[in-house]
Image (cartoon, rainbow, N blue to C red; front, side):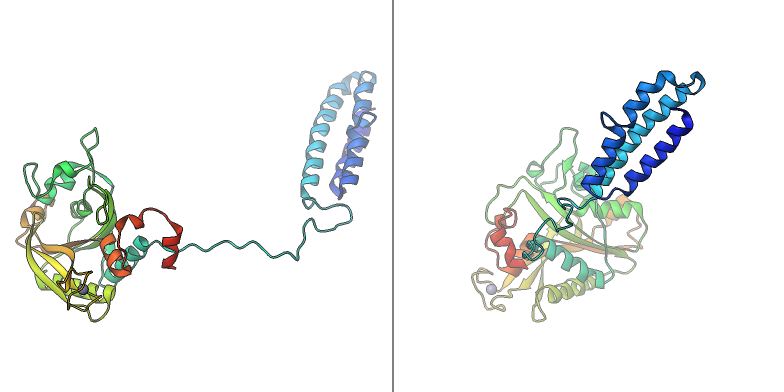
Length: 339
Ligand SMILES: [Zn+2]
């Protein structure tokens, strides 16, 4: 067989393969060209009779045709509907009902974070995030908590071998933001925190916080009060009252604790608020001037407030969840309630 004849047969074969549209015709093409008595063995057998100057080319063409035709036939076969037979019948019963996938629900922690971010977003706060693995400087020193300070239990911290730690609060994000930009800064920092707490109904070694920071000229404690009061009403309902009690945090001066009136009893006293009528929600205060100095802000010109609260605590109060562990056990019977 000379080169030209082979070329013709090759293009013929590829055309036949291309138009084969059933298992049977595909198989017929395969047998015709690649089968034991097909074209290919014949070409190989006759190769020694081919003119010497064409022999190499005929051999090469025959080989590449073999591979290309096989690949084309495979792809033709794959393109036939899976399971369809030559009669064209559907491979499955189209009248059977479909399989339903159960719809997921938002986790209460995610819901509270999303809602809090949306509420603060309406007041102009944007979201800032930082690393879970922090330096001791960002987690303690920059927040005015020197190594010898008793206010934060450093032994309650997960330390890594390289001297870094799992952040015990989301406050280091505030430091990172102030280090990297000039006022005004108005951010909330939702995120995961870690403390070496023994897990019980109200404690978990892994929990979530959302903190806020507003730094500008002429920011006052009354701005802070208005911000948290608005948040309280949006999160807990229009009738909630807010009160502030003096407190101490190393990062702020003056510092306050912020309580919301109990949404269950309305302030008259019940089991949820342990009879006091109030529920402790947030720690807050005016950013300490020494913190501003550390990040390079001038405390004579700049002032600001910061606040922080636990996401789990808000979720537990809001949804009347009695045990914090329920939030982490991934029990679908529990989670499906929050559709
Ligand atoms: Zn109450």
